[in-house]
Length: 388
Ligand SMILES: NC(=O)c1ccc[n+]([C@@H]2O[C@H](COP(=O)([O-])OP(=O)(O)OC[C@H]3O[C@@H](n4cnc5c(N)ncnc54)[C@H](OP(=O)(O)O)[C@@H]3O)[C@@H](O)[C@H]2O)c1
Image (cartoon, rainbow, N blue to C red; front, side, top):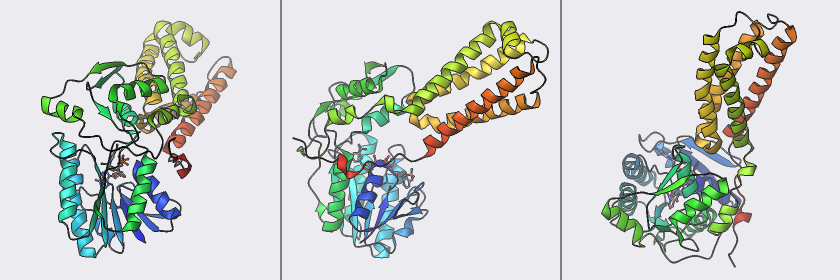
């Protein structure tokens, strides 16, 4: 079957595309940043503007996963309308959309948009299937990655979720692709209900982060909707449980984060030295030109934002590309400056050693940047197991 997946570059989309390829389907992923993978074609599609939406033509099934919680009206509502119209015009046989458990009459704007998305799919001209799922395991860690590093995590009181293994969702979607249009199918919920506060504490513990969990006040209607259990459903026994997922969050494996922290620490020590004792810094590390205390304090204060950026990027993957790129440019130009003056020091070996250490730092920063840009390996379906 020829299948196009909107949001194919997202967490669920990557897993589904692999699974469908393994099951012998011809897969195209579509999104603003979708890149071809092995045996998977990619097309650019922006549902907010309609760019590339006509690439649904030539596909038997369109799986609609694309979503933007921060631009839900433009993407989930208006974008779905564009997609449904294009799929109808192109004579697509099946439109399969993913939605969220418990969104009926929900006061949260994102959930309201998902409910509207469902209505658009149902009212369109293409035979459809809608699957509602509970929150994926990764939702809480991803949300926490977006928080500023202020040492506080706001959590609404009394809320519990039913986290599900995203591989199970992908597996069921693959089955639904093959089953053909099925209407609204039974909700899919994770194997257990876990208090949100416990989920946050578990993630903090697994990442070895210290944060203060503070109660998040919510408007009454929203608080009730999140607490009254409407977002829970009949549990499935399939897939990984929350505790197993948390056990897999291993900060020790995150070498890039540790190196980012180490680089920040070394820069911080250097900046403090330059700020507190410019004269000894000049005589020990940088004996070229006239000693200039103001210049060293300037460099120290310029360095501090880099320290803060690297420190935050250690815990927040979404910060890494811009922070590493900025620090690499700063360090690279610094290395060039020392190359110009490489023999201007006395003794000369200090000039050479400074240049070599900057080049080594640059190599490390570029390596961290490239590692961060490389897509994460997709877990194989072996992570999918039936819980005992
Ligand atoms: N995460 C959960 O807990 C959960 C639970 C139940 C249901 N769901 C639903 O499952 C679906 C996938 O979730 P996910 O967590 O895998 O999402 P995700 O990782 O955040 O991926 C979202 C996808 O949407 C694409 N997208 C965003 N804006 C777009 C636009 N303007 N035009 C085209 N594509 C756009 C993104 O690609 P680009 O940025 O490259 O455009 C990305 O591929 C969503 O519909 C979500 O509502 C999620």
